[in-house]
Length: 110
Ligand SMILES: [Zn+2]
Image (cartoon, rainbow, N blue to C red; front, side, top):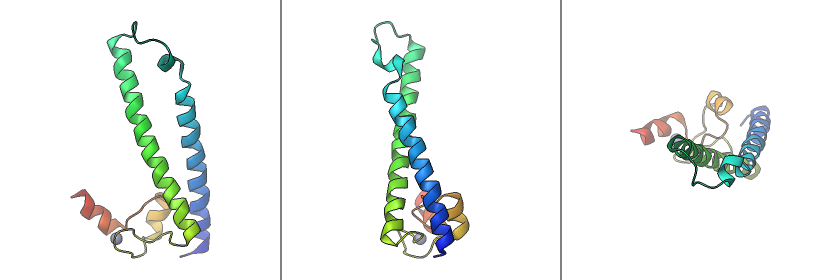
C-alpha cells in the first residue's frame, strides 16, 4: 500500500468525519424538532421524516468512515473486507471508506 495514498485517505476520512459529526450535532439542536408537533402541518412532518432518513444515512456513513480509520491504524487499510485482495488505488482515492473491491461490490449489488 502506497503510504502517500494512506496518508491522503486519512486526511480525507478525518475531514469527512468532522463534517458529519458537526452536521449531526447541529441537527440535534434544530429548532423545529424541539417544538411541539401539535401545530405541525403535514408538509413539516414529511420534512422531518426526510431529515430522519438523511440522518440515518449520515450515521451509516460515519460508521464506514470510522471503520476505515481503524483499518488505517491496524495496517489493513486498502484490503477488500470480502476477498482480502487490495482495492484499486483509484477507488480508494475517490472513496477512501470503501470496504470492498470493485468486483465484490458489484457482486453484492446483484
Ligand atoms: Zn473483493
